[in-house]
Image (cartoon, rainbow, N blue to C red; front, side, top):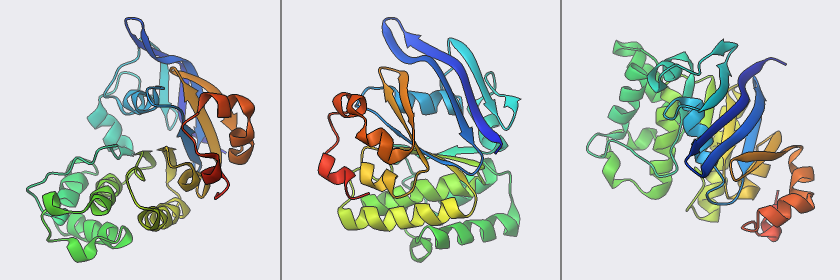
Length: 246
């Protein structure tokens, strides 16, 4: 397999607060990687480093073989990185379709009818087509999460970064969203997914990585990782009966 993302000895701190501690991680093209860890472990900060909204103190980030450590977030997006945010951040006064169109034009560099057709196709895939003309600020939480996913996909990503996209959803809503993410992964898009809803991760990911205090402490087959005593001791927030649902 070919590596799509490589983090090499990546470090970042703010004074005594370490958010990345000599992290080395390789994500293979077509893989679905889950990332877990307690609150404050540095998971979202890792995404910020990968996407360019934070600069590392040291280390290298390579995307599709190119060193992007010094590239801006906009440049990385145009290269094929896209992300959702833990707290949905739509343009609340725009419609769902207009939100998607911004992502297609600014992220994927599309225009005209091609951009519109692309957005409508993505809205159908994310089950928001019937809400295309709905003002984004009026959406339910599930549909705001779906809009986060939509905007990321409209940027035509090769690498999709999902930050706790299942958080706050009911069990039925979570199952519905997982089905959508599974279909996206089957289309060939590489996914890196941070999540506290562990059974959602276990339904999708090929590999699980564990982060604690900015340090990558384990990586491997998901059920083996979850069975690790070290992981169970560190990640006390996991309900072990939920893990069995995977």
